[in-house]
Image 1 (spheres, rainbow, N blue to C red):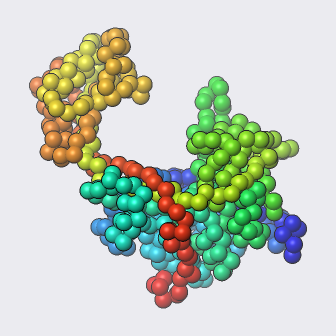
Image 2: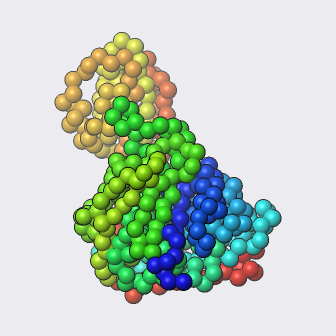
Length: 463
């Protein structure tokens, strides 16, 4: 069949980050099944889960250090188990980056899940090559980062690889593709490349599919999540906000909708906001697959409800390098909180902060008065010093500091606790926390230096 005569590809998204709602996939799958039943012959559908952020992989690597069978998305079971059997029964293929730091362990878990559900054993592929954390890659990172990498306690290093290995795995017959750090839009571009047979240098089509993937990748954000603002941007049924479904044609043009019988909305406004989300240059959105260009993009609502068309997207030749994030140990973050209420509560909270500053000389404290000034404050405390006491009667003091030395960071927790009896009157509800910090460096590596590959796993490897 000629690619131009193929029916639109359906791609639903059921997660926009690690920790997203675990019941999102059900309505998406029910909608995809219904559309496949009513749609043209030969139409195909995919379900994607996007579960990685910049630091998620470092946390996954730390879990893998403790347990070699861990290091993948911790909510994998909760997200996938409710829909896995239905996906396999209806030919809906699954692509996700929930492999995180351990795609092979994730694949084994999915295979166990299928057996426990009584489903046929799925053909599972893993995409690898993004993980550059090992000692064998240290010289490569040093060439890119120079002296700043010296002495770093590296936790993770991952390249943002693209859609080609995903498409190759699907072409080889994979029903489920488990990735680590692929670029978010590539989860959509890979299925489109496979379905329509696009070349890896078909820049305009890849650019359009990339922006379709960009609209899908944050899950409910394009359906009214992270959008609602009462009285200004009202969203119906936000408590049951739906997740998005894209229809992508053979030229990469897309229409965005959402799962049936769910809350939220898909409108020109939600699509425009998500289209521009995290895009630094609308004419040159850099991804490993293509440089997408939305400078002349247009968004139009279609007849009916919750259907918006994106057009006017172009694509240019992809970058010659992959972006790489390197996460490394960065000391400790200490936090402490205490509440003050009643007459002169704000004055007592300010006095407590002053006591801590004097007691913790040598630590650079961040001070917030939650209820008076916090989000709009600054680390140096200038905004707080310039903001007069307004006599608030309900204030929670939060202080925080970072230090390379754990013992120094622990001083903060002890001093906040001591405010119970050594500080101003009426303090209560103390909470403290000490958290290891992860810092991030970024660099670029030549594509040819990153060994990207996929493997269709054998049955014996999935036991």
